[in-house]
Amino acid sequence: MKEVNAALSGAKAKILKALAHQTRIYMVEKLSGGEKCVCEFVGETGLDFSTVSKHLAILKDAGIVRDDKRGQKVFYSLKVPCITNFLGCIETIIKSNLEEQSSMFK
Image (cartoon, rainbow, N blue to C red; front, side, top):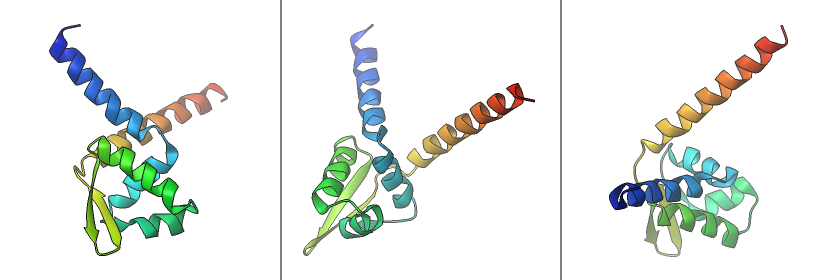
């Protein structure tokens, strides 16, 4: 693999790895509706503040979200909202797979 292609593939893998957790997918989907405070995710997920912060740090490190500190609170938003198109594509694959499975039992 050429060096440029390898670097691009590695960058893509980093983003996919960041999304490879149901909590982080949930967070990205929630952020598609607008920015949220870490404290909101703590309340919604039932996870502790530290765990929520770690998940958001992984998403930030991958370039999926950005943060904005305001006083004691940190707000997160999607850096590139088109990530939700990708998640929609995944849902289409899931539906297609389910349809194929159900047609096998008819």
